[in-house]
Image (cartoon, rainbow, N blue to C red):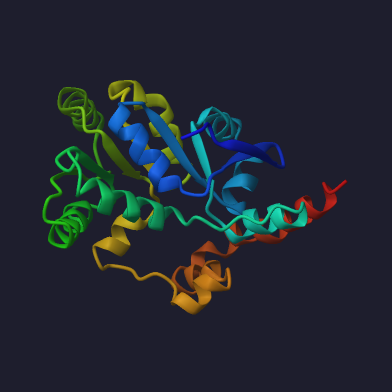
Length: 241
């Protein structure tokens, strides 16, 4: 499969592909290391204030259009491209990995104690061939050093990191050398959803690019972060030529 075409999103870029999951599966079987970032408007605005995050996004091997704001940005510039929610990309890849020789080479890292293990159990019931190593994200320095050594020893080929933005993106950028031939994806709160602790927005909200409103309903403390959405929209409009 060809190298993905890039398209600018303010000071960043995303990659345009018809099938991200197939591209990643191909790279996984080839043993090509890939850092995947699922970009939305909130992360784009965060990157303007956080040079380290901006650098991580720019150095990523695959940046997918996760958020509705990114898709709108493209449409304003004549590019019709579907949204690719990170949780759906991660799930699609797991389903397909479960039918392949890489089914025993998956890792979940992050989340609260117990959550990641529960999420892995749910996936193993859904896709019996999967074997998933897990580690929660609340580690002291000694425990984190031991975990990094475990990663280096085990070399899982598919690694999902759920530490929240921007911590997970920075952690992957700093530590992907431990497993240089792996697919690394920051999955945010996906472990909580897979574990059954939280739910996704109803399909009609997702289909109408309103999933952000459901997240705000579930987590009203996020309202300050949600102010980045109108800011992104204004920046997107003002950058039109």
